Length: 448
Image 1 (cartoon, rainbow, N blue to C red):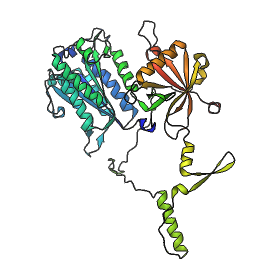
Image 2: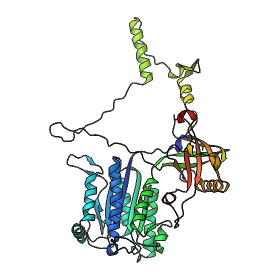
Image 3: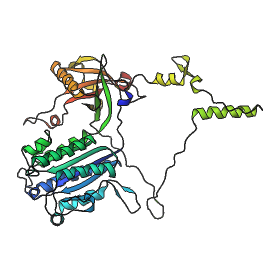
Image 4: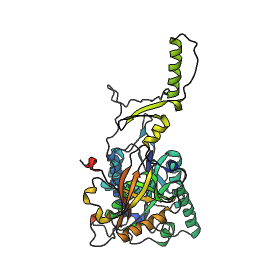
């Protein structure tokens, strides 16, 4: 890699999620594996409601959510003229004051009305009716929403359906769906298919996605959505240096999300309406402008002729006291002095797992996942390194620099197996993520 700075992908911007729920007649059949004997539609609505509630409670103004019902007889203008698709809520909506509406409790209450009130639910879906849409058109609509309605950093879509959908599709239609799914993947949209009430996926679903998720109960469906969302909260993408100019790229994921207070808004004291405010950014004078002006003022005070001359910043020496000595450095040297290393992970060595103590875990760990989009072959090298570490029962000791101008940290890359769905498996083992977990090893001063 010639430049590591170009490989950094920061975590920022809006996060868009679209829930697509199948409204065909087979979705209203009772799930035999459900303890409450609910229909597949009710289970899907409940799982969506749980996720909406979590997003609303988090108070993250970057979260934008859309809801689409497909395989309906009714359509609306939000479907862009596509048949058998009904857009219940667009990702971007505006209030009466033309302010962008975020995800709040009102949407959760609307979904609660469909879940708890059987009369409201039956009337709503009776008006929608049943039909069959072209799934490639639905994927195209998802792409269009992310392309024109919302410029999002994170793009995700969850499709709730069953094996019966697309079972009568010809091979040509299946290939058409594959093309649209490939386009969505290139656009950075992660479409996850959730098959309800099934033990295994049908062949036409497996041809679209070999790792398709199948859920035979409501509890597994809720956990599956939660795991999918947690695994997408990446912080950045950095190189993992193995030495001898061998590197691979990994994305760093936070398995624990920090809960922050919702941003406040200004209200009119008398009417209690939201006050519309505008922010104007004013360009501040640079160091070159300041040095040029000070030179002019000094010449004017001395009575000499005003001479416009700009001082070369590179010739300015900065005096800093380091280690009891006064050192003179240029601005560029001082900036490089603060940057000990480029962002990335540099392997120092390997140590047996017995050297890693329980006291080293003083905070939540991060998760590493390879990214082939930056360096081809990263996933293959990552799996080989992970397999050998598990076989030899060792962990990797590395130097960790997350971003530019941040202090390097000593970390342990701990390999971890994925918990197998066995009868004696604990709830903790079920949440294991297969791969390397980053454990930050604090120095003695930080521990005190």
